[in-house]
Amino acid sequence: MEISKKKSSVALHPTCSSTMLGSNNNLQTLAEAISENVTTPLDWSCCAFAGDRGLLHPELTESATKAEAAELKEKKFDAYLSTNLTCEIGMSRATGKGFKHILVTLDEVAISKRG
Image (cartoon, rainbow, N blue to C red; front, side, top):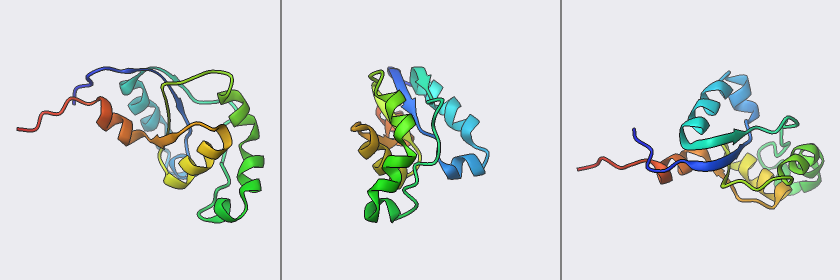
């Protein structure tokens, strides 16, 4: 797969499931393939969205993401990425930035070689 134009910078939020699966290194590698600069906040942790709990109790996510959100607000990124829709909702609310799935961004920057 070829990348048409890398993003200058992306913020990356690993998830509980990517951590438990041991796939955060793969996530980092994919992020590096689509961006010149990848930032995973030092204070990242579980966003506490927990399925639907974040919808019903947004204060859980607000509390759990406070340090990570503060770190991400210090700089502007071209994209804010994760791997789970509910985490993306929680992180979008926490930071005011539009988190989306990393594969959506990969699709945006990949060169299509379809016939």
